[in-house]
Length: 112
Length: 114
Image 1 (cartoon, chains in turn yellow, purple):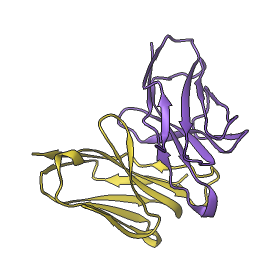
Image 2 (cartoon, rainbow over the protein chains, first blue to last red):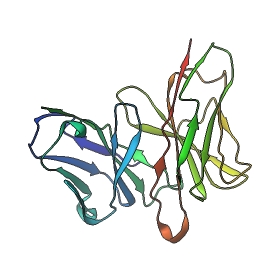
Image 3 (spheres, rainbow over the protein chains, first blue to last red):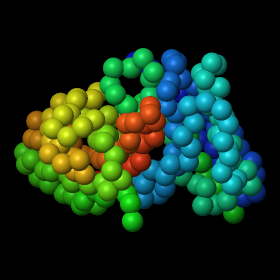
């Protein structure tokens, strides 16, 4: 099946710093989503971005489908940005309809 | 308020007992999914359903069962045959029209079996 690798696994920042999270995937996709998992476990949808670039406030994301990677940018980080960031994809050639395959996540800690 | 609800938030059971987790959505989505998350891991697909009265196994279906009698509801039963049932369970839903499959997740149920 498709493989999803996220880097770095852990990231520690001071408030106000910028960061870039990376997601590499091993096959073509027709869905790519970025999520933030808060301390209570809720998965918050950040971006649905199978290709192209999107921005939402301090967050932006870019997916280069032909090169099989996606980047999530967080600018001017805040303590509330702390948590786990997941990238998840649906393999375009997969047999399980709509199945999201998740990466292992990036644990972000923002210190005041 | 549109969204996905899961109940209960926390569930404790003795080994050997079956337990059913509830998932309801009012987003009018056709597809619904169940995922399992273990500590420090990403999510893995247990079962999914594209339409009422139809569902398919995901990657880790052994020891689980589901039903889809209504569009809004997709309950998951964790049976005594599931070897390691303690985990965080998340339900999701999505549209299936026009090739757009963005999935939205419920708040999850933490199951502890002792």
